[in-house]
Length: 346
Image (cartoon, rainbow, N blue to C red):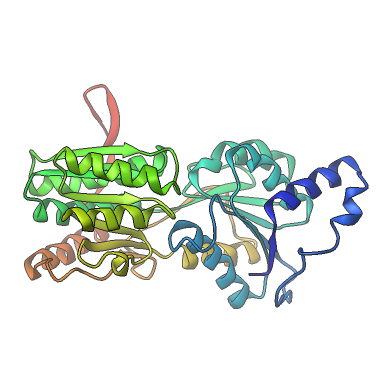
């Protein structure tokens, strides 16, 4: 995928570029050479990934997005993997200093860094994937996680025998909160009294934490688990399978990771969404706003392969509900429940 930067070397080289260090000369050679570049447009796109590009989940989808943009549009691409919270600002700044026209920060956890870095580099446009920020030269790309999780909530409640379902994610921020709310609304539309538990492991890739969280939720009575993790997602699905409970895949179709447990997957074609925003960037049409794509784009957001235990009646319910969401017969809007701001069905 274009230039793949070693994270440590990229950070050192970025510091050298700022400070005029002799390291700068050393940084011009070695592993930072392009792979099969095609720079017809002269447009440079970069992506900062919080995990590894081979996780078969969130980070892989981002990596595939810039690769698709390269094939489709002929842009030059670069990436850095495993960007920690403490390195976010430096990585984003380094991309801008290297002349990137468009920088994707692949995760809502990058929002604060984008807000601080973007004003310093007005010639670079920054996009927070899964973010909630916008400004003169930065915006966000959000798939409508709530719409997909609402559908999964219907399935979860329909399949649950204990009336107790659960949600596991790596971090708590706007996108994961919306996804959790979708699960709740969908499940309660079937069984108003169903219990929905949630836990945030604090790490998208920690397999041990993911397994521990899954076991704890199952021990508390949950018999359906919806997860949103990266490398650790497989641990949740396989643990659910071992314990004889159901689960959901996320981001890519993860049915084959645990075919006995996975009911379906909330498939989010971030590769197509990233390529779409890159095309807007090449055309000079990007705006400082939150681009939110939902079920109205069935090529980008949809449910994956269904487990054979999901009945035709449930599938028919999902089809009709999807049509109602797209036609705005079912509409989600901000509301208050007690003293809290949340999302309700309007």
